[in-house]
Image (cartoon, rainbow, N blue to C red):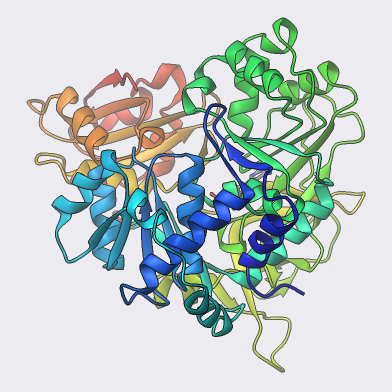
Length: 525
Ligand code: AMP
C-alpha cells in the first residue's frame, strides 16, 4: 500500500524513464526528466530550511509546473498552485492568509510576487530545477513523511469573500487516484487531454494516474477551448483517447457543430463532472461516439476531487436527469436530514461523504472546517468525520444517487465553483457601491449582479474594478444598478425577489422595479 504520492513518480521513472509524461504538444518532460527536476527542486527547498509548510507554485500551465508541484512534495512541503492569470487581489488575499515563506515562479510571474512584500522568498523555477539532487537528504525527508501529511492546498471560492484553502493529504490523494483509475479503467495506453487548470483539484484526474500507469498527459492550451474545430483537431493530432472535462468544455464542441465537422477519432473514455451535463448535449456526444464510454463524476474539492461515478450505459430522454451513480471504492455517501438518515425511497437529504478521501479541512480556518466536517451522527462510539456537501440528493428507483440541487446559493458555472458572496464582496469594495447581490440565471447560464450605488457611479468603473479583483470566470455577465436593494420583512437582502427579476433578459422588472429604479447592462467578458 502506498503511503506517499511520490512512490508513483519513483516507480514511473524507474519503469519508463524515456517515455513522455507531460507535454503541451510542443514541449514535454519524460518521466526521468520529471523525476530529476522534482528531486532537484525538493533539494533546493529543503536546503533553504523549508519543511512541512506551504510553498506557492505560481507558474503558467506547463510540464515544468507539474515538475514544480512534485518538487515541493519531494522537499517535504505541500504545494499551493496559483495560475499566472490569477488577479492580483486574489493572490494578495491568499498570501495574506497563508503567509508563505517561499514561492516558485518564472519570469512572467516573479514581479507580482516580489511586489507583494511580506517576506516570501521568490525562487526561479530554472534555478531550483537545476540544483544537484541530494539523495540522502531527500531520503531522510521521505522517511519522516506520513500519509496524513498534506500534499497540496487549493483555493476555492469562499462565501465571505475570502477564498478557502482545502488541504488534501497523501492518503486522500492516493485513495482517489486508485478509486478513480479503477472505475474509469485507465491503463498504460491512456493518452489524457487535460483541460482543468493546475490550480484546482480537477487536474488530479490526470496528474497521478499518468504516473501510476506511465501514461501521457497533453496539457491542452487554454486558447483552444474557444475554437472547437481546432480543439478536436488537437485531440486527433495527439491521439488523445481519454478526457475528463467540465461539461461546458464538451458542450462547446457539441453545441457548435464540431462533432460532425471534425469528430474526435480516438476518444474511448469521456468523463465529465463538476456540474450537470445537459442531456441533449450528452446524447449528441453518445450518438457521435457510440463506442466511447461516458462517465458522470460527482464530488467536492473537500473530498479530494470526485466521490461518485455513473457510467452512462443506458439511454436517457432529453428531459431526464443523469444519476451521479455510486460512491467510489472506499468512499461512502450518507443522505441526511440534519442528523437523521433519509431512508424513504425518493426522499431527499443532504449528501454527506465519509472515507479516506476526505481532506483535512480548510487551511487556518477551524471554524468553517468544524461546520462542514462534522462527527458522523450515525455513530457516537468513536470519532469519525463526514463532510457535509451542501448538496441535496436522493436515490432513484434503481438505487442510484441523483444530484437534486444546492442547499445554498453556490453557483456552478463552466465547471467553476463560485460563491456569490465573493463577487458581492468584491463589488462592495468599490467606493459608492453600498450593497450587492449576485444570482445565477440557470436558464441562460449567466451570472447576474445587482448592486446599489448612486447614478453617477459608472457601470464601466464597476466592471473594470471587478476584472481587477476576480478571475475571468467570476465576472458577471449582466449587472443591474438599483437605488436600493429589496429587503425581506426581517431586513435581509431579498435574493428570491431579485432572482425572480431575472426573466426578460436580465432587466429589472415588475417586483424589483416596484421598489427601486435601476439601469441594466451586459458586461463584455
Ligand atoms: P468543486 O468543489 O468545485 O468540485 O464543486 C463541488 C460541487 O459541484 C458539488 O458539491 C456539487 O454541487 C457540484 N457538482 C459536482 N459534480 C457534479 C455533477 N456531476 N453533477 C451536478 N453537480 C455537480
